[in-house]
Image (cartoon, rainbow, N blue to C red):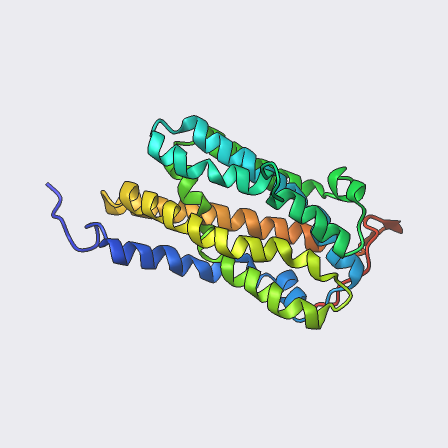
Length: 253
């Protein structure tokens, strides 16, 4: 019989939460594209490219959450989780996250059609986002909840944009920041539920805790690939005389 050592005992709840939070070191706030955004080094066209591409992620969020609900037999969890769908889709008399993102598009100079038609969305962004939605549809609901824990790190990036954009990009209309202000409150509330489910479900063994860390890493990878794809879509690449992409070059020197 294998001896039980400290290396295979489950971490305490506090230790496990700390391990999850440490994953924030790989959050896409550290991606070169987002660093450039924060430093005010993106052009108007590059910011428009980002807004148009990220809209595909925004419209997928309620589909991801609906998939979690469809797999979850726990009525109490569903009662709390369903709010995430109305947060993004909106309800009568309120602006949801999807509409707020369209308003962000208008604030950076895009028309509603340019945003909602998805005509500017790159294949890489579509592939990464679709992979995330499919994960939520196919995996146990607790694993999908765990994957949502990138929300742990989201308030910082929302606050960063609220604080820096008026100075770095004064041409962006103020009302365009409403999405980030809205998500500041919602993300903190969402984290409380998602973290509670994850800590309860995955704390039964070290193996399960490691699995949770892998799931969170998968979601971090999805966000990083989205940023990679958007950065590529905002860059002019010429191969054998052919222009593959149309947007201005980003200088990452």
